[in-house]
Length: 399
Image (cartoon, rainbow, N blue to C red):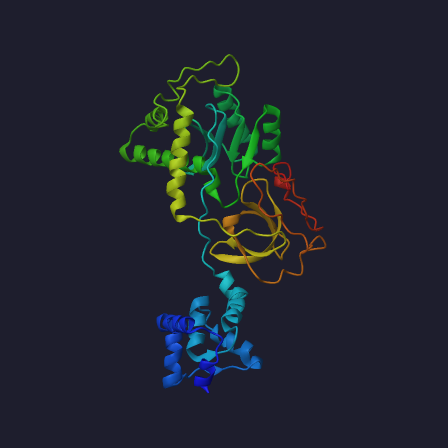
């Protein structure tokens, strides 16, 4: 029969020889020929009927092993069509595994733009040393720091210290800070009256205010070393100010300035900004070697937010004007702002108690070019009344 089939094929002798030659060189077909001659290899795998598959998948994941280990374990003893996909779906929705998922990897660095002049953009933060609170203000251009002792961490104490610094060096265009107390009602009103903008960083994400954080580390180290040797800490701070920037050869204290009752106007080398940009690009190059972007998220997508060492359930309900910053709502009604690195998108069904404003049909637009300006998102909040303690009602703004 086979001989008859070959003889009656609509194929020339030359083409048939070419087919035979290609079959000899094909590893898969050679393996198939061997199976036909010797018989199919014996297998001890159990073929699971459809009715029992959900229970088998749950048993495979009973110890909450990772996705690849679960699939490897299953492939050793059972089989059914689509088994790997079924295991992946179960593991992706396992609440226990999601709660104890490892932290997100770091994303490529988004450096702040280099200012055009000194004292145009500042970073500020509060730190404690020996039970005392200090306000640090650092210039993004020259890295020149200012430190002020605070009587307390209230908005009024911070504003008074900032006014003292601005009276000496001029009013900046922008101040990058943490949320509290810099997003309080008094601080926002102060910024409006003095004509500068306050840009706040995402909570629990100090990297977005890295200039201030790094300056605080340097200052604390200088103060500790001065205390250990019994030296004057002011000398250490003075020396740090003199060499605050390794790019600008002249320190901030030596740069010629023209106050003229206006903002600080330093006269520096013409290529300073170019050198600062080159250094920022170099830092980004090194940082991005072990970083890659996280996958995009959608509006009203189920997610988990990082709280301590675990991931808690939430839903993404808005976007913030800051890069990679989102608004999330928890099943308990809490509304939080979080960086993308602190969000874990999941395949879980969304909670049922997000309030009447929840709409799962609304989806975030796809990423667009940088020159396209996105409209301000519509804030959706629950109807639950939020009351602040009496001592905070005049100090903070609840958005």
